[in-house]
Length: 246
Image (cartoon, rainbow, N blue to C red; front, side):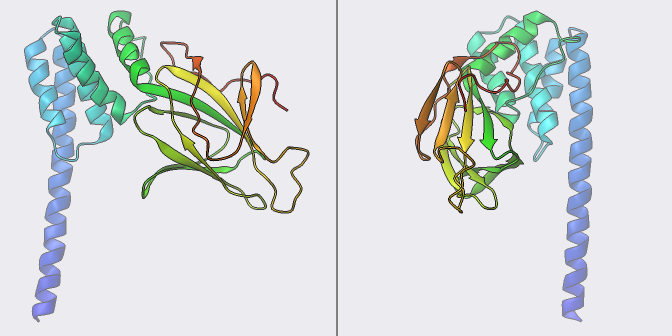
């Protein structure tokens, strides 16, 4: 009897938590809508009040938090706040979604350009092309898996977040590559996995780091740094096959 009662209490507790969480998310969304509306109406103090409530909501959705920090930065720009203060807020948004592009049909250049400038100070990009194609690539930081995708892939991330890339494919040796990105930079890396059957398909079997303008050969385990300029406002699109690669 006691066991059944405890189980019912547990179910009730979980249900209350779910309702509470749903209510908090709904409230965060409403505050975000109000904050953005106040911003476009130039009611900046009211906008800051609503947006702050979003960022203070426990476990608020990343999407809500991103936009709350983004629009807080916009408010600060309109209020001519110190750039250090605006940069700090934009940094919070960028940390949540380093690849985000802003809607430039809605948001004017005097707001988008400062945001992209801050992002270029924090984010680097790397295009990874592999032989064979469609290799499983996992980003690992400590015990955490940051992503699990297949190549080709464009990785744009915070330069302060160093982690390892694990590339694996049936019939080929796994490769571990520590990744270190450079702020505001982008480049392409071509990785040729070595066959476990001794057949590398005509490739050297080495990890090939293809940099536009020439090939740099290295073995897995060397820290890679991106070296080319990015385009500024937009994150780079996957490039054509790197010049000089085999």
